[in-house]
Image (tube, rainbow, N blue to C red; front, side):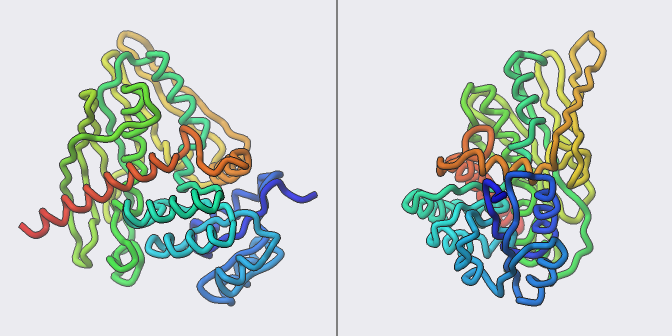
Length: 341
């Protein structure tokens, strides 16, 4: 039986690995081709995941008419080039976050998808998970009263190696571009609940952090203020184990999500949850169980979206992607200005 959506994967690193592993659980999506930075890497990867074909590079993969959609899992600075090539070839595109390294380049990719009439989505996979739908439902029904603040973190400690993409300015290194978009996108989503819109943009940003010896942000915090009065504090890191939690504060309580980005902190976990704390009441633990890992949920979301070309809420719409990158641009600019003082 031919799957609903046949994927070509660009990249053979850890995220591509997670994506292919997750799609083993999908009956509607399948990986049919893979391209790596070398033929050897692609062939080894294809053998590992029993993928029918492999390609020496992206052009060869795009020549494969069996590929309906392309999943881009290459280093950040490659995203624009790879996405534009896939779009020009008429393929639907799911691109790992960030879509590109800044708002201007993302706008070019989005414009190309609009002209070509193909689906394009930035891969913040957590937005497709049922946990987020459950959280939004609780907030909209007033579970903790008026929502006033979010604190969201995503950071880890990686060995500092100047040649590794996380610590290389040329490869888009630093915590803000690698994982800072998660807490920022979460804060903007919750700010949208406050303003009764899909997402909201901050009217003020104050950033601070630590620039490491290779010149990338190894720890960064931003304080965001929105027109509604809602505020958020977001932190990212690649050299500090700051955790992966988010807390939504309301006037009558709070909701704690131990890891909204990766269920239970494991890439292929099927169970996650949150705890609702209401003033004067016992905490309520909410368990969310899915039938497949998050990356498979995301891939099937793309399949379900077609023939539309733009994602729908709460996944990342094109305007949402541009707004998120605008905040990341401002955050990085703020840190660079401090480093020059």
